[in-house]
Every structure is written in structure tokens, then in C-alpha cells.
Amino acid sequence: MATVINMPRLSDTMEEGVVAQWLVKVGDKIEEGDILAEIETDKATMEFESFHEGTLLHIGIQEGETSPVDVLLAIIGEEGEDISALINGEAAPKNEDAKDEVKEEIPDASSNTNAVAIPDGVNVVSMPRLSDTMTDGTVATWLKKVGDKVEEGDILAEIETDKATMEFECFYEGTILHIGVQEGETAPVDSLLTIIGPEGTDVSGIVANGGTATSTSAEPKTESKTEKTTVEKKEEKKPAQDSGTSSNSSTNSSGGRVFASPLAKKIAADKGFNLADISGSGENGRIIKKDVENFTPAAKVAETAPAAAQSFVAFGQEKSEEVKNSQMRKAIAKSLGNSKFSAPDFSLNIEVDMDNAMASRKTINAIPDVKVSFNDMVVKACAMALQKHPQVNTSWTDANTVYHKHIHVGVAVAVDDGLLVPVIKHTDTLSLTQIGAGVRDLAGKARKKKLAPAEMQGSTFTVSNLGMFGIQNFNSIINQPNSAILSVGAIVQKPVVKDGQIVVGNTMNLTLTCDHRTVDGAVGAQFLQTLKTYIENPVTMLA
Image (cartoon, rainbow, N blue to C red):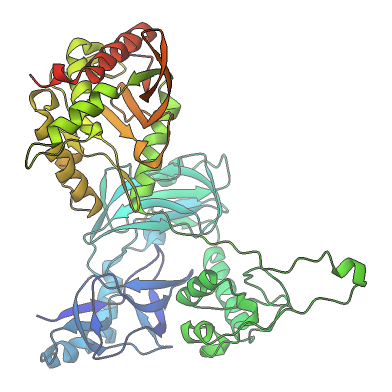
């Protein structure tokens, strides 16, 4: 069944948009996540993403055309599907009667006797409609807090729509004066999200009125936006000029702005091209995707210099690349940052003799269809040691120390985007072979990004092993709300003393990082001694 996509409202004040460029054409196959078009709002040019799969059957707004929000933008459906009825309905929202009806439904702030004046420089930001069907949004994460300084382009928050979690960009400069929707709260589109303005400004009246306000003068806000738009349009008519600058600048050699689509900017950044060196073939000299792809940088010629000096000149290009942080990396940064800066941690080290463990593993793995790793042995030993030292199997809260009667060991697994910690539930009740099978299954799911949320939750202790990379010692950050994490190093051969003789032995270093609020030094040391005993005598783990 065909899906109608309307002109979205991509900023909190957007009333109409201009299709700067279509990146697809009628007949193209579309997948969820594809960029359909670049749309100019009243504040920026933004990429508009598809939330549907199918074939692009119709384009309702051509490149360069301006259209109000909610007017038919495109139709996606099955190839050959009859959409004549949907296209014929396109005129309905555009007629004057419809416009009048919409206007009548919108209350005029100036007629509201409760409205208050907006102080100079203050901007009320409403919950944006980030998809064409969004009616309300949930603030997943605030990246700024009241009192923070913000600039145009900063990411204020991550907002969950009915289709995805999206970053919400700031279009103003100033200080966060008020936050109207807290993390985890859901609010309708257009409700008060935040207020930005000069530090110390009193916005209590605006807050009390739910964000509804009138300007302090007849048209200052409107004039400001109009003037800005006019200036930008004038600058946009200036063709991009060549520049000798080495950075990916947004200005050319004469100081004028270089206009480029977001996709063109991304490709140019990836290739290390200077936008000021590229001629645009789009409207008013705008640089588009094909301009960047067809651009060949001119060879740089060294300026004339004495021969002695030229012999020391190094030729090359300084290049940096910005890669957008994935949701996983953000989650890792937030979780580990909170842990590192909130938990007073300390670390203890111990060396383990691995000769018996190596011999036992060889014997166990000689059994058909059985495979046990050294990491499996460590996980099993941890579970048994936690039984004897329940103080380590705890979590801290401001009011209580929570003693977990169950033992769930998390095993850190490296994946392409970062780190995941699948959890082996009730580890103390499992055999070595059961632990091995469980770890392999969950690690495989983690690398394929197939882990269910329940498979990553509930750990009471964590093991992180970098021995396979040759790392002998390292300290891990506690995976809160755990009270401790064990770092496992590589098994190395080295001279050791046994029975008064120097012989070649196999050793492994273990580092226990503890939250001092729940685990004292003596408790952590006793836990490590017990753990060492189990690993050095694997027969004790076979019962």
C-alpha cells in the first residue's frame, strides 16, 4: 500500500520548506534510511531521510519549489501501484479555504491576555516534528543542561519519534535557561521544550504560560529572521570562487559564503577537499554531490624559495575526519564516564600459575565435542569465588548496599562499533562446558548485533579479557552497577621459582578493580586469593 510523505517540519519554527535537491527520482527503489532530498528550512539545509521501503512513485514538490509544511512531498509504494486518488488529493491542503481553516485553529499569541513579553535575545524552542507522522516526542537524552552555553549547530538532545531516535540541533546562541521536557518524558509537538537566551534572564513568565509569549515590540523577531534570510539569499547568488586555503572552509577567497549540500560537504570532508576550490553546478552556484565527485584537486606548487631552504620543505596535506558518534559509542561514553567519575575505585594485581590450568584444558578438550577456553575457566572461577565473598557481588545505592543472592557474570566482547557485555545468568550453577557454550553463543550474537536487551542486562560482576591481544596488564572501568570488574591478561612464559629451582613457567596476571564504597582492599585481596586457588587447581571447578 502506498505511503504519502508530506513536507516535514524540520525545525521548531519551520512553516514552509524549499526542496534544494532531490537525491532520488521517480522509479528508484527506496530503503529505510535512504536520503530522499535536501530541504531548506528557515534555519538550515537538512537531509530528509526515508522511513519507508518501496519504489518512489511520485514527486509532489520539484527542486527549487517552496511548499508549506504538511503538503504532499512524495509517494512511496509498490512498483506499478495506482496512486491517482492520492495525487488528486494533493490540491486539498493548498486551497485558500484550507489555509484559512488552519489559521483559525491556531491561537494568536497576541490575543492571549495571559501572554507575556519575550525578553530581547530569548528564544522559545518547541518540541519539533522530526518525521512526517510525528505527533509527540520523547526526550531520550539531554546533551545540555540548564546553565550550559550553546552555539548554533550544537546538539541539544536526542529525541525519540514514532520512527527513530534523532539528534536535535540548536539554531540559536546563548544559555540554556529552562528545560521543559525532562529525559524520558513524552510531550506533544509544539509544546515547550527549552528556552535559550542571555544568562540570568528571567523567563518564569514564559514558563508559567507554557511557552506562549508575545514579542517586546511589533516585529523585531520577524524582521531579524527576514533580514537573515535576505542576506543569505543575496550571498547565495554569489558563485563559489577558488581559494588557496588548505582547510575545508565555508568561505571563499573574497570572504563570501560557499553554499553546498550536506551530502556534498560530507563527501568533500571524506576526500579532504576544500569546498572553496570546487565550482558548483546547482542553483545559484550551489555545490552538489556530482561536483565533488567530479572534482580533481590541482597539484600544489611550492612557492619560490632559496635552494637550501627548499631542501627542508615537507610536502603533504593536513587532513582530519569527523565521524559521527554512533548511539553505541554515546552509550559507552555516558556509562563509563558516569562510572569513572562517580565511583572511588582502586585496583589489585595478582599473578597466577597457569601450568595446571593448561594441562587440564588440554585433557578436557580431548573429549569429543567439548571445547573449553581459559576465559571459560576464569569465568567459572569468578562465580565460585563470588559465592565465598558476597561483598564483591554487590551494588551501591545512596541508601543501601544491595547484596545479590544470584551470580550473573558479564563477559565483555569487542564489536566493530565498541563494546558489548552479554551476561551469563546464574553462572555459579553452570559447568565449564555450559559456560563455554553460553559465552560462544552470546559473543556470536554480539558481533552480529543480534543480542536481545535482556541478554545484556542484570550482571553482578564483569570479566574483561585482552589476553588474546598479548596485553599482560590493564585496568578496566567498573561496569556499574557492579562493584568490581576483573581484567585478564595474556599467558606468558617466563622464569619462575618452583621448589627452590628456577624453571620455565606459564603465568597470567589478573587485575581486580573495585568500587571502594562497597569493597574494601582486604575484601578484594581475599577474593583474588580465592580466585587464584581455583584457577591454579582446575579440578576444584569440575565438581
